[in-house]
Amino acid sequence: MKKNISFVVADISSLPFPSNCFHLVTCLNVLEFVRSRKQAIKELKKVLAPDGILILGVCNKNSIWGLQKLVGKRFRGNDPFFNGTFFTKCDIVDLAEQEGFKLEQIVEEIYFPPIKNTAVAKLFETIAKRLFKSFPGIFIASMKKKSGSI
Image (cartoon, rainbow, N blue to C red; front, side, top):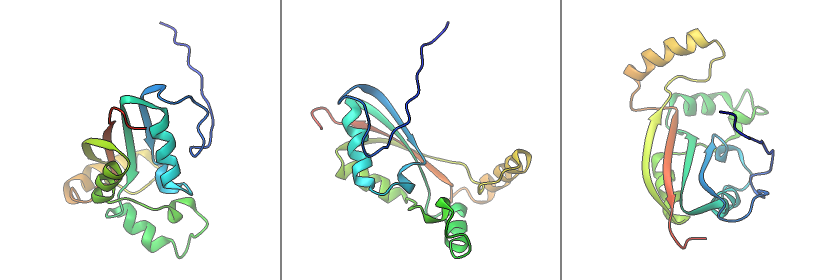
């Protein structure tokens, strides 16, 4: 079955889509690196249909990634990874509440720091998932746009 898919490159603070047009929106590892998180959320919410679902993936501030960012920023200040603003679980809960979303679920994923070698990354994931299960690298949240919410 052939699907007609088109891709659009756009600024998250000014999305080129009509209001209420998507029933599902995914935003993975973007909010940590935008100039205005408030404007980005406003745009995501605008294009989301009433009762639509937003899947939000963000880096965990209290993770090995967060520690790597904290320690490495001094040496790699030009790298966007080291200038992002990472999240805690509480930040996600607060964001959902403040922006008119019903938080459905937060899942914790990925336990190894960013590594380019896939084999090494898989090994680290296996080990770190056991040793650092309280410090996931990524939170993935599912939140529902409340009916009547703009």
